[in-house]
Structure formats: C-alpha cells, structure tokens
Length: 174
Length: 174
DNA sequence: CTGTATATTCAGTCTGTACTGAAAGTAATG
DNA sequence: CATTACTTTCAGTACAGACTGAATATACAG
Image (tube, rainbow over all chains, first blue to last red; front, side, top):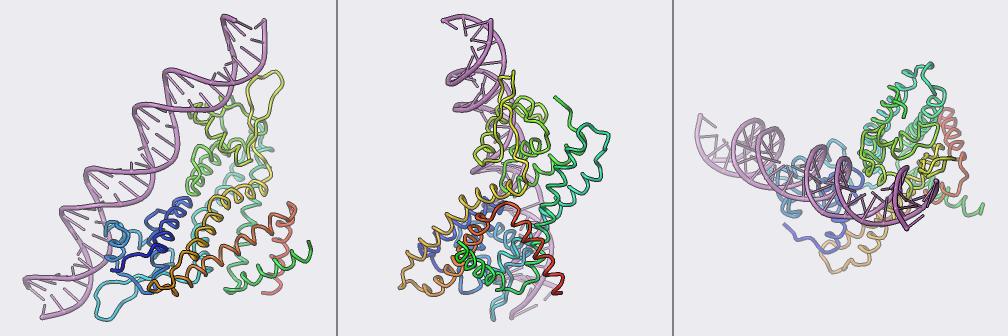
C-alpha cells in the first residue's frame, strides 16, 4: 500500500465533504475520490487501510458506487481479490450521477405532483390557488425532465462543445 | 389556523423528504412547501402549529429560507407579527437555490482543484497522472461555472423558451 | 473435502444534526 | 416605563444514519 501524497489527501478530504453536502455518504465519496486518482485498480483491503475505515464499510460503499455504475470490479492476474477502478471520464461520471438523482428525486416528485393534481377536490377551499401552484411546479419538473432527455441523447462531448459555443455567442452579444 | 387538506399534506411531506436528500433540513423544506402553497403570508406561530414543530424551530428555519432569498417577511395591517411568504416563481426559486449551492459547493471545489494543481510536486511518483485527473475535473467545474454564468444573464423565461425550442429541434432531427 | 483467503451481513455503538422548551431579547402599546 | 406580544438564542436531548468488528457466507486451492 502506498501512502497518500499531500495533494491526494487534500482532494479526497474535500471530495468527502462535498459528498456529504450532496447527500452522499462521506466514505462513499472518499472512496470514489481515491479510485478516481488511482492509476491502477485497488483491492478493498488497500482502500480500507489508505482511508482508515473498516473493511466492511468499504464493502458497502463500493457496492453503492457499483450500482451507480461509476465503479467496477476488475481482476488482476495471479490475485484472487477483486480490484476496483473508477470511471475516469468526468462528464460521463456526472451524467451517471445526475441520472441516479433524477430517478430517485425528480421522477418521484413528478409522480407526486401528478397525484396531487388528480386528488385535488375542486370543492376544497382555495382549490384553484393550490392547483395553480402545483401546476407551476409540475411544469418545471416536466421541463427539467425534457432537458435531461435531450442531453442524454447527445453523444458525449457534444454538451461540452455546445457549452463552448454558447460562451462565444454570449461574448459577441455583450 | 386552517387545517391542511390531504393534497397539501401530501405535497408538504414529499417536499420535506426531497429536501433531506438534497442536504436541506426537513423542517426547512416543509416550511417552504407550506408557504409556497399558501395564498397568504403566514405568521411563525401558525406555521409551527400547522406542521407540529416548535416555534423556535420555525424561527431558525425561516431565517435560513430568508438568507437564500426565497422567503421574506411581510407585514399585515393591525398585526404586530411578522408574516412570511414564499417566492412563487418556480424558475426563480430554483435559480436562487442553484446559486446557493454553486457558492457553497462549486466555487470552493474549483478553488481546491486550483490549489491541488498548484501544490503538485512534479517529483512525486505519478504526478503526471494525478495532474491529468485533476485537470480533467477542473475543466468540468470551469465549464459548469461558465454555463451558470450564461444562464444567470438570461432574463427569466428565456431558459424556458430555449428548452421548448430544443425539444422541437430534437423531435425534427430524430 | 479441508483449509484458507476474501467478501458480505448485521447487531450494537457512535456521532453529528435536528429539535425542543425555557430563558433572554426586542419592540410595540397604553 | 410597565406590560404585553412576539422573536431569537441556546443548552440539553432525541434521533437517524454511519461505522465497526465479529460472525457468517462464498469461493478457490491443494
């Protein structure tokens, strides 16, 4: 096991903190940071030692990262252990992260809003007002979903290019 | 104080849960949901009763919402109490929310990445690899910042329109 | 089939954040 | 300026989720 360099520590710690703010477990985020910086796949044991967390904690965290599709197990010749590596394409990384959140947060909220609008009793006091508010919120979530669908279909790299184009257009217009 | 209707309860509870997943305090999110649905500004006392939380808890939570700029205190003639109302423009609501997160998460991360790249000792083992990874991540955050800056300058409503346009283009192209 | 290496599960514990209620603070009214 | 109405602060407590380590399961090697 290799000791972490100062820069690696800095990155991993920061990433862990950011994770917590995004509702991502600190250890999960740290493990991801470690794997992202690592040029080779690492066995769970080594991850546990490097980050000073329990082996079992690594097991659980890795599984979470695997379900998101941003970490996968690979095998090394002559080694029985699973070695884990992170996806390195940053854009794809975030695309997958966003995908997860959409499924867990946006979609259920859209559903809830639909339910609410369906359940609304027009005889209730203030039903019209409530409907307006719910409809406005629902409209937003539909738009976000639409945007997400569009981005999803663009090949990787296109978003990046569009962004650069947009930047130029903005500069000219101003 | 008016009792909540079924739909209101459903919305407020769901919003509270969503909040927690986004690192937003459940009570804060519920209060926002309540105010969003309310056609009139509500005094803290009434909020506390309606949501069954301590008056002091409402005080703290409201303050948080105020600092984000999505809730403000208004006065009602003949009433000494502060009444609170939520911003109702959903797009503006999320714009402000995103602004907060950017300031608290994106900006510090950009700074950290810059620091890391500056601190990198080329003599360290694997420094080149580390630099590549950090640079890729930094590039992403720069792009996100760029995107945010662009959106910020567009008048409200334009984003909505662009989105609809994009949807049409996608349909034609497919 | 036995022993060993590795991975996962889970009950209990720890930790940080949220929440409460009492106390202190502020401001309006008569 | 005393009283009342309202708001904020804060010390202590409650609670949810994270973490550990021991027990259990799985898989490979000889």
